Image 1 (cartoon, rainbow, N blue to C red):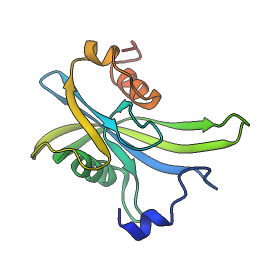
Image 2 (image 1 turned 45 degrees about the vertical axis):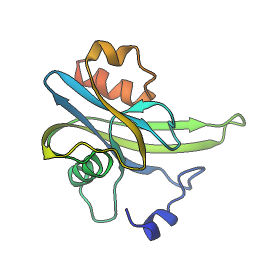
Image 3 (image 1 turned 120 degrees about the vertical axis):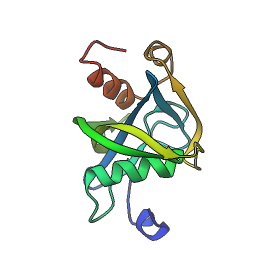
Image 4 (image 1 turned 45 degrees about the horizontal axis):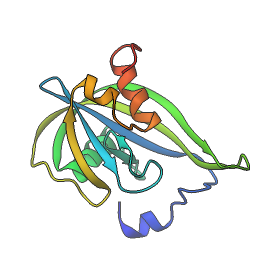
Length: 151
C-alpha cells in the first residue's frame, strides 16, 4: 500500500469497517505466524495479512500481503472464513472494525524476510501455536481451518 493510500485510511476509530485478508500458510505440517509490530495486535502473534487495496480482489490482496510481510510467495487455495473483528474502547466506542477474509495458502517461492510490520516470524506446530499469545483473529482462523476443534 502506498504512503498516500495509507494516509487516507483511518484505522483507529474508523467511520466504516475496513476490509482485510489473512493468509494461513501451512508447510510441512506447520503454520506460519508473524508477531505484529503495530496495533491492533502489536506484540501478538497472527497470520500474515492486511488491508485490501482499491480494485484488488481478496485473493490478490492475500497473496500480496503474504509476500510483503514475509517475503514468501504463495498460491491462494481456498477461503477459510469471513468474520468481523470489532474492538471497543472503555467508553464502548468502536476503536477498530475490520471485516476479515482468511484464506488457506500454499507457499511456492520467495525468501523468508519479515518487513517493518512484523517483528518476528516463525513456523510452528498446532500444539506450539496453542501456547502462543495469538490475536483473537489468528486463533479463530486456525480454529476454522482445523474444523472448530480449537487450537
